[in-house]
Image (tube, rainbow, N blue to C red; front, side):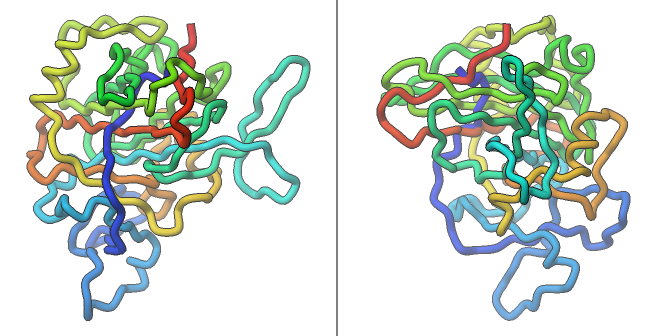
Length: 302
């Protein structure tokens, strides 16, 4: 079971949003700037063409979004490498063999299959603390037990402090294996729900352990009621299928390495029009499966 997903079941639209700061520098990393929303009769600038997003939730307006409340997520699906690949590889020891896998970007609403190998990278727009929760979701809409899959003491010693430009990978490149495998749990499971929570200060009462820990349903429900709500989603135009880059690999493996404005941006941006600067933000991502038969769970490391 993949513990942590953001529930966002919404239709896509053809509207485009361009995310580029009004005064862009090579070192300042910004995820959001509504001044670059594509509108009729407004020509696209040369800089805006570098990063374009499609509004995937047309009923959730991107107006009046506070930039530091935005959360960036890239879902990576791994495939065996080919001799013609130019992207970065992940080396995985499988029995007596070492096999290269290529992470490819996929959009958040991509249907996944049992046995798929996936990774997540998360990026925030402000300094704070990151928590990631995983739950199974079933055909009747009910959710399984929540598990905190990040942070753990096996990742940066349990340090979950984040800031703009820093990538948090789940699992990390040093984990064995460095990916989640989707495995059947129940015949009526339809998705994994990953909840990403960003707070200005650490959550009280949580003791970080070496492995994923079970949380109380009541506690997670309270967080959702307080910090969840309506969430919009943007998908990078022409981003799906692009492979992992050297810059992303370096930033994911080195906590002191931050991505700059000109380096690869998240595939998916989540925004909450009503969120205020500095308030906790919680968004749900639903990793859905392509068949109604036994679907998936992310196998947690013990």
